[in-house]
Length: 517
Image (cartoon, rainbow, N blue to C red):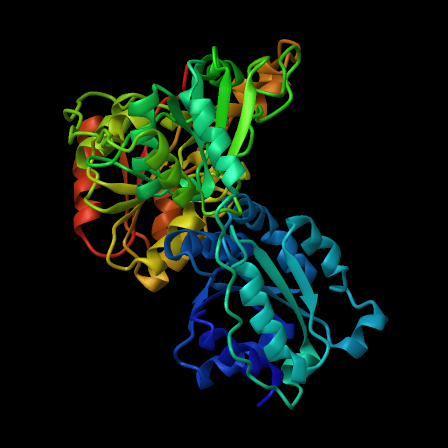
């Protein structure tokens, strides 16, 4: 057995049976080894951002890692943005990065780079395998490291001669660490804060955003009068009829500040202390109201759901959660607008769907339109690096072949990782993509004034304009094997969405929605 074969055998023994890949010459022995291990499903992505984003989406649904096979430092760099999103999501990902043969590195060949310097900022785990005999053990360590709570990116650097060298040894899986409960003092302090008469907000994030966590939070809110909010961009949030429904913390600083206004006690359950997305002139970065006391019930590394259940048992033993009733919007009519396209989705969302939402400014009204829709899981842009939606939807569809996946995608963001459509066609994944084509970087138009920039002229405005030339998403999708259509009215969107979600395989609908005023 060579090093590459020991890597694949060890991955499979650890339960990692999907490898999203964009390989190059240095990874050819890993590619060749796939035929010896048919249980490993290899999924080709035509760009590294698709590969890493798909691994993130897969992990968000399964809670376990896939492998992401990348080619040297430039391959890792190309996929880095979606590994950043995966890190912020707490997704376990095993990034296997091929490198030059150990003896070849001193020649400074064109693709030579310092891979460790690219992997280190992901704040995960990094190891370079030095010998074929160590490759299996290094792989087992990488899988275990990826599963460390709350989940992280584990980067295994695999030189070519380590892959092709003889003497590979598969290694048994290393049992992953279980998330631990926070200490008694943290739970008792949160209970004390909630029992006080001061206005209290409970902010949920990360591992608290489970069905059980939401139910416990609702019980706490009913018993204590505390307000419950969910972090702005949760990795995975169960929503819909039969579940508690909470507002997410606003993206805009003034919106978030308004939601938190008056809070005297802020209890964090799996969430970071809230801060603005960017620094703005004349606006504080810290969103915690002045004078408010912050209590951390559970960090992202903790079992925040169990901590919430423990807390609910103390302050709300006799209370049941308040659950959202089934309520769909009435199907609208007329030309598409920022308001009515979300009503179409809310009215027609399939049961048990997975919704990968990167609709950005076009989707500001989506939460209200889908709160009473059938139960679904929402995946959002955790790290703010756009180009996540299509790849995350792809990985989620690989993870859950029996569930419909809906990708709601802003036009500018879609262009970052459009080749994900090709992978969806190749794998015949049930992904319905709705591209909101407003022919603009609308969010940047909005931010231009918000950061205090001088009134802009034609040169500045041209950088936010995506209409010269117009982007034809239906043509590009068709060119990658995905059936595509265009909707300009709510009636057309409804007809096309019904058809797309009732047929197998991927579909794309280009919804011509005007930009947010």
